[in-house]
Length: 299
Image 1: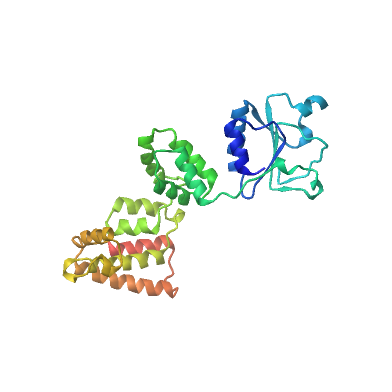
Image 2: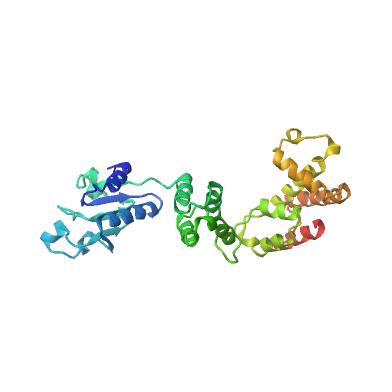
């Protein structure tokens, strides 16, 4: 059976009580969603057992499986052979053992594909209608596409109504000790450019949990300060000349009002020296020490 058939039969309430095998490649998250849907459709209770032989029933009842359970067996490789497999039983496995070749009806087997990034993005949107696609993508990146971590955060967000969900996500983003705290090098350099001391301090507290490296910070700051110098009326350049968006050009022009060339040029010189020494491996400092050293000379 192909997955779309299973989906249609659950939706149409036509799924039979037959024995099934659900095969997966990376994790059982999607399978667990289908199992929950089947339980809801049939009014059954999910009952996890170790093997086919542990299903406690008499021979006659075993075949009919008249109790209220949907028996679930989780195993890496399924090798239990029987002449007749019980109804209302699903085996979740990565592989069907070679000794079962020819013993399993192909219509009993459903292959679940590996979760793709867009699957997870769409799943988030389906669970929290108050989030947009950008929010969903951020959550995926912050959780490193760990669907179980994402599900844990969604459970928190779903406690709030649609209008509040985006605010809740932002709160989770900067929550102390949150698994989602994942500020980027762009967040950090933006905070430096805008002199957002509170945000800089917040990121520094979590710097070891973020994908922020000194060399990346230096290169981005060099680029940003150079662009700020060029994004002004006196230069005669526009967004197209600098190969940046008009929105970004406008933002840089706004920053130029806060920075004089006399302020920027010595910082460019400092960053250029740090960039060279970092590239040559001549700065023997920890990440924390180097970030503090740079901030002292830039802010």
